[in-house]
Image (cartoon, rainbow, N blue to C red):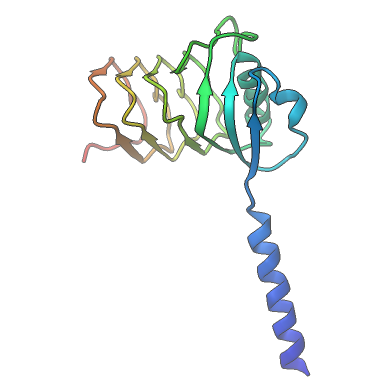
Length: 177
């Protein structure tokens, strides 16, 4: 009887562990509507569809608060429009904009959109990112885009990157391979 009880307990604990790390997936059909769709407090968030500055501003607030620590935007298309996401910075089509995740110290993992062509200056400066894969669609990495990322240990740079501005990995923990 003890073995049976212990087995049931282990199964229950395993289910809790598996479901505890579930990723919330939200599909945004119309850019700017994400704030009305998300009511979850999951640490891992996957967004698909079309997003603009209004959506990114909302996501920044969740990351800054530590509600979200992991973002997957692999199936996102960033479009111009909506509110400024930080200070006076606004979105452009297929661009990770300047200061988009600036000083989001609680952001630990990020999967970038497959369609972006540029990561502008200071886009991820001061984040808690541990690793980043830059998609093959990216051509330009702006100045200081990953500066002051003290936890950033692994970077995979896509084959099409042609322009690396000054200080891309300044004062980060990335080591040359």
